[in-house]
Length: 294
Image (tube, rainbow, N blue to C red):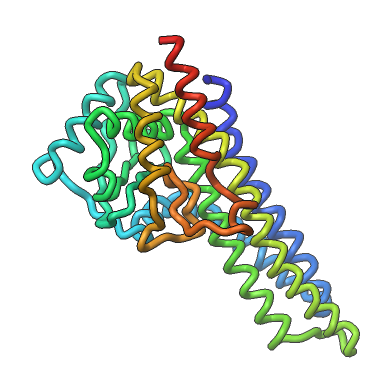
């Protein structure tokens, strides 16, 4: 488990570095097709570095805002606060800020850069559906993301997905309205094709990155919750309810789908190819197998 935590920390910087390199390569191609305008390449490189830095510090607040989460106090949500506080005392983890989303769909996510700056968000539907024992398993899972530094990796992936969508839109506009600057129709056609291909391929690549990172960290957080609560069957029961009663969130956002404990989007054939979560039956089976060792 400790090696997985260290790997998550390394992944943060690898993803940030890969993000800047990818944008630099796109900038080189756009600059060449625009008539050797290398200022465009420099602009994209500086913009990529600046955006990656900004996302590192701001993405957690963006995720909370996109989900419509509202912070709650001990007095406003005593059950919620008590369960998280007990888990934090057990693990020696700093108490995170607590947020609630007014949504009947049962779900939860954790965010933040470090355990000292973390937040846990749950929906009102989760409170209504889960027993205290099951809710403790879910909160242990989210606290596991915090303790394992998954929250940092998740925020970087969130920023990457948002940025790639923005860049793809800019390239499409440049391709259609800017055209080539090399003085012939062939160059203009190449620039247009470059913009279209980048707009299609970039979001697909971002989706693959988002899904591949998310699936393994969900298994790890499940295991961390089981070790913390010493009750893997509680989380297994909670996941079973999420599978049975789960529904899409009212304010679901594809760029932050990987943050939630269960898939917050509407199911579909194409979406399953880029699923950000491992199948719930597989997660339950792993937890039940763990339960035999306690």
